[in-house]
Image (cartoon, helix red, strand yellow):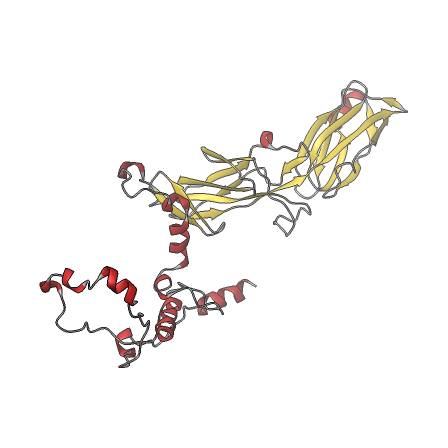
Length: 338
């Protein structure tokens, strides 16, 4: 797949037309727009406006403009815009030549953004300093009061990964109101789960992580404890952060049917080898929230077994995505040792 992708990118190029300049399309007598004659009633009220123009400002000969029909002009600038990736080529080509000449799509996105369009023409320059940055991953423009040159950013989405495959599939919602920590900065996701942080030094690695205390569902667990990224200069580094629904691990430790209080248990992920310690309560029960999907072993800490002269076997359990109650009512038995 990577080889095919590289090959396609290598051969990709913009449209290239052997297009003539507009003056070469000149055809004597061809008209673009025919201006209608002034109605007699308007002429009688307004009179002749020519005497209002000073003599020295009047042309003695017509301007040397090309005579080109409107459709020919439209097609001409459409081809030029394709050569600069400025306009789409589709059935609707009625957008007018003045809007489609040489502007690439990123310019259109920036110009339409309210942060630029709402500026007052007489606004003090000191209040409009900063940088407009196009976030390619989120396909939107972000504004930052700090310079953009040789700075970088991190952006992406926080989403509920229902099937725990690490990517946002159709139907998996974004998580709004989640605090994301990026190095020394932090931000909160919008209603769609999107976040972005700018003004990070380029080429320097930063840790990105989710603040678990900001999650509105106690069963949600960040699939990544933290991630280290090295953002490029003058651009955003895309990093999506999945949330998985953790399982509830609960049960009891017994010896001949009686509860065993205050013993240490060890939960080990068989894939990563990560170990988590927990303890039973006074009645021998245990309870843990947020066990990530995966296969685990659960056992009494061998040091506790040795100290109490007990023996026991590990339980093998599997936490599957979207089933938070599957690890309930577990029973871990221990016996008196030799």
